[in-house]
Image (cartoon, rainbow, N blue to C red):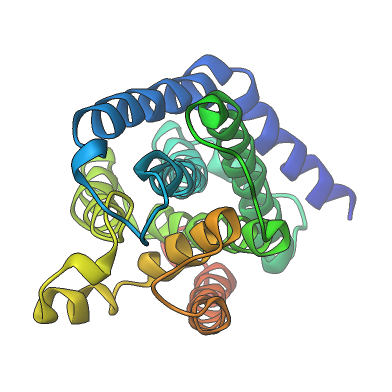
Length: 251
């Protein structure tokens, strides 16, 4: 337990010491998105009847920031340790693979929630705040950070260079995030594109989180939660197997 707590503390301290880059920068980026989209096209977009576009947009921006930063925390930490050669100091202590997994992923959850809270506080002034289902919002926030922290761990284990990790982030994480309904409702899409969107697990995270904020969503939150729970479980099993086998870590 001491080893797990030490590694968890080290991972939290790693991003907290550069909080201007890891916490403040995503908040500023989200504010820019809100300013551009809400003010430029907000008056021309109708979403869920009378709900203001800013109220629709803010939960998507909060979740997008949490997902990207939870992924970045585990993936960047592992790839940096590999390249600088200090990974051996993490592997030498008698840590079980599940303790390794828990320390990295929980630190990613902490960073994701910290960024999400920062974006929420910074944007709360731009829409009529209600939060009708806070428990659903908190549940999807936790699941989103947990899922992307685990996915970042898998990417960090697989990648040998920064280029490979950047490719994973630019060609998988970014497209899935932007095409998950952050800026629009999937009901506004043509049939084929709507079907394609429903194959994207990130869509269910954003849609369920938005339900907690505005009480409306494209899919029932229980359905979204079931899909996310199954996806996270599969990723967790894969990550634990990779850590247990030592794939690209101990070889």
